[in-house]
Image (cartoon, rainbow, N blue to C red; front, top):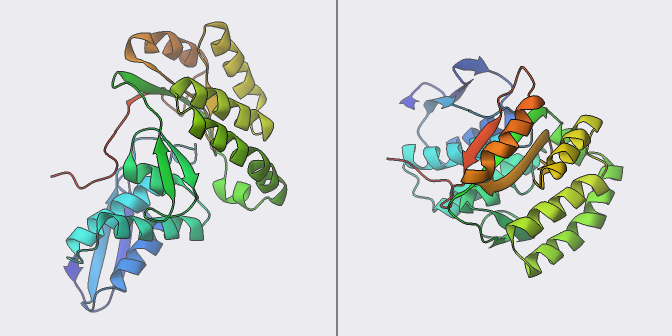
Length: 257
């Protein structure tokens, strides 16, 4: 950030200048509207996961940027208030509905009431510290297109609410995976190649599901069991994407000092 003759924004993703980061630009515009000083923002996102594959990169970019700008501009908004700006930007551009609230609080959670952080409510699923999330990205699905499809929206509303209620009464990892799988299959989002991988993993005793929205197979397993699942995933790995073995963050988004 530096003082300038007029307010302006430049955004880079993994070192490359971009004009298509609409969500980040929306967040930056909102923060610039809250300060009287004219300044130029040079924003650099570093993203280690594939974009568009249902791994929450858009929400993470919006949330991390909101927290960073709040501090850089000296606005002194609360963490929740900054996160609300990120949530509004995501909803506005149809890149997600509940991603930001989950990333704000961390862990594995159930969104029992929709809305931005501070308005929506989450309930955490108990998970051991030694569990990891294994992911096999195969390709992107358009969240914007999916959220604009009335037929798909109807299916999501019909099945999603009941499954959330069921999980809230039994918030365990195995139940989460079981219901997540049921949701993906009942909404007809699973492709033929995803179904093949799910069946293969089933045969080895691993319950997997699909990220929404992205053609990504995932599961939550103990670290000492992860290699068995990762071995299956590597058989189906696409040249463009790496298999992911990620730890679970239990604190949520925050400024690292």
